[in-house]
Length: 449
Image (cartoon, rainbow, N blue to C red; front, side):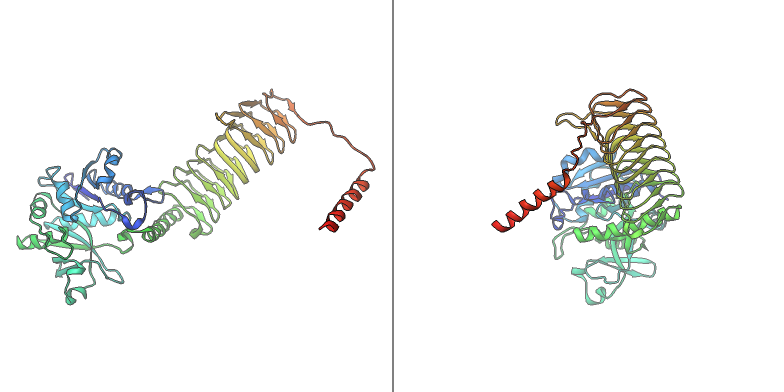
């Protein structure tokens, strides 16, 4: 665990040109949350509450969103060592430990952070390594027993150094006062002409300081440089969230087809069918059944509710206990009270559906008039007939009934039946003549063609 003096520096100034995007790389979303926010959340979970985020000039307008953390702008991108120097110039670390992490490496776990900090207790620097299947262009950790002698970038490595499998993740923790001195002493005499943070290890060893390492899992050290990397990281994150949900007692009938968000919350004994997507801000309470092919966003589902298949709960949807929302139903900014049913082919938006009410197939709350969105209120125990259109603002009282095909333009009092149908006319004995007429028209058109 970190001491109260542990401070983090989050490097977030990368250009991200390979993302091919107008959005800064670190603001791209993973499981619904920007990459940099995953990193900050991981630091917080590890007990590190103080951080300085290093941003590029194009992110100067984003500084306020990082409060209460400090931000600094790296005006010239001269390498990771330079970025850390820019951050350290903005505050006095004193004898604090300084942890350096990367905003485009969002999967680093709390356990690994704590392990790294624990290794640092008896050293000046602790670095985080990993052993990928293909070391490729990763920098190598050159070790001697349990100590790191140097970190060599692949572009500058000798053949013997390139044969080393232990690679550098870039993450390290060091004594802040010493790190400040080392980054000031960095030189850019390398193939890229940059100031490499990795060279502080060699400077520390030259000072006869102890440098140690620990290893993290390959999956948690996936760096994101392009859309393909982002997709790989999304897959890893989804596997984590699915495993955590199932370990907590959620049934996922086809885990690989269910997509969760970073803040999806489940109660006990929830069942989730296949091809279901949970966007941000979704809470599913206890004993809920979700039948699959559903989409949720900023919605709440109460105990023993049943949803789907093919249902969509948009922002502001709130289902009370035992509510039912069925196939091809869309709920938006609406409160479906206890035991109410909206079972098929309906849109309920900007509305309240009272306790025990039943909404027939094809019902629409016409909540938008081209300028304003207005509210529909449906009372407890009301029965809304199939293909009813409720033109908001309108209120249907408790126990009221609307007939099939009714257009409700004014309030319906409690215990009242509302209908708006035209009188039906039956023309007896005309069906055969009508069919003969249509047949003749069709044959005439066929001859003309």
